[in-house]
Length: 240
Image (cartoon, rainbow, N blue to C red):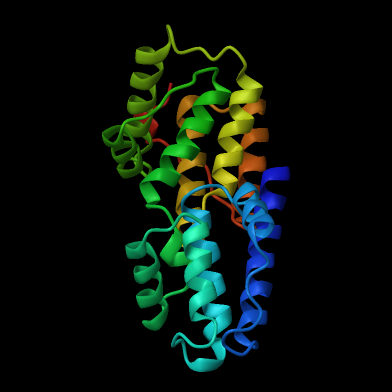
């Protein structure tokens, strides 16, 4: 996706910039100006990805100084401001890196948001554009290994949203949802967990070819392509 390519190129540019700053004596080599910042802001989605960019820049610039702010301190402070980070956010990133936490972990959104995205993407394949509540996401997550309960919850969702929630442009809505999913910073463990939940939920809805195609694409976007999730088997008494 073009948005993902733009994000990745911006992260790469930020890391290169920080490395160059770390080798430049204090007072020399200012940042390239508003053109650079405008380019970074345009290519980096708001929020978590900008936190990730700053974390990567800070780690790259301070790698040779055991994680302590060094020569690039002032330019990096400017970078944080230009990316729209608050003073508290920048401070938390610095503290996290000093404690050995990776920039990806520091920038990652809560797992619940990732779960909501994959579940809503699966619902779009059924023709429904639904924004799940936190309680619904939690309930579906807890029921992922209980195929009977998961089917009951899926049925309730379908019945509640069958009228009035149909999406006018399903392919465009799905594209937007998958783009957001691909752009959200997340750890491998969270991506794997979300992928398993998406597969279970899709099976509970009654998987068809369209859902399988979307799940295959989702697996690639989450970079969990080597994972296999066996289809859950319902107890014999619950089969129809």
